[in-house]
Length: 479
Image (cartoon, rainbow, N blue to C red; front, side):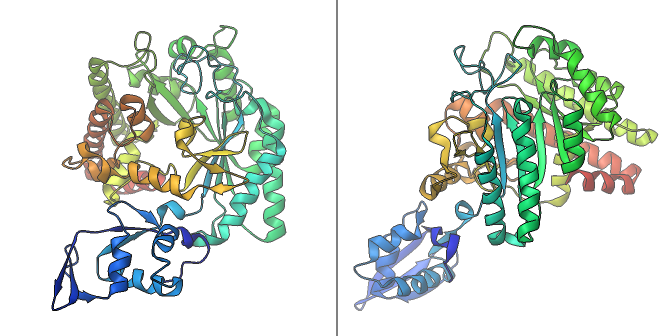
């Protein structure tokens, strides 16, 4: 068992077992593997220090140092793993492969539901996440690039990872965006490594020719935050001066499309835009054919958050989008791709079980302007979900504890649910927002997710019966 490099942070937990003494010797039975064997005193000592929850290798080493040599410990752990008495775990020690970089914690919108600002507290500026309002420095951005290029050598396949520019509004710091992209390409050429992929999530108001040229030059994927209809956009996402934001947004979308840059829309769903098919139809008029719908964070129950009745309406709205998709496929017409449904369809086809809702804290982390890492951008500024600093590295104990809580097996409500292995325990932030605990799922979001899965099943059946080639093409574009 080679535990060099990042593997030194490997963790173990005890699996169900029974130890007993017969004739002065200790024997053990590993319940899950069915192995029964005699255990040495050293094996028993090591096993006694491994709890039912994960513990880091370095902590096991400290606890057993008086009895077991370090070199012997590795062999003992391998024996116990091979026979099923303990289980190794390394997800918390894997290098971060994707970073959401907060280019700015300033924003030029005043969104009613902003989970990074006024939506959390009336005293918080939008996009600040409770942190100091500042722009990311070029120095910090370059450190992020160096981090990804360094860790690419120990990630499977040696991929260069990815950078998503985020905020606040990231285009309020466009010069640093440009510097990061240029530096990444320069360093990748210098060291002969792949270049990280780039993407950006922006509200679109500052899109101009300079940004368009950056996207073309550095192959930056673009996601625009837009709530689907002019009314929803202007009501929920006004500018900081209180003006309507749709006119500038529409101009930005058309400029991006005219330059041949593919974009995805991220539409936040509030009680102002439950009729998703209206958003779909409006996106068609803008020649935009890729959208992901995300339910608004429920910070202000009076103004916009969804009630149980609204969630029922939303389930029907996704059914409408599913029917629209099937009808368009049958007619051979283009359609707006709803990522929520097509991703579910692809997952169902692949029959891949999910233990986690997403890659938060596993391969994904967010980087704030002060250099702190959080498990994802939605938890930025929240100390309980900080997992390290770019100058000091990852806090593996804290990361391990959070990843354990995010595993769907820790969610009591999930254990008997038919969709457990399809959703992975629901969005960690939605869970936390609903229940102040990432391991207790949001009931409303669970019900919605299960309804979306059922709609995706119907879509898959209808489309595959009609045209199997189109069905597989849709799957490939969703993966």
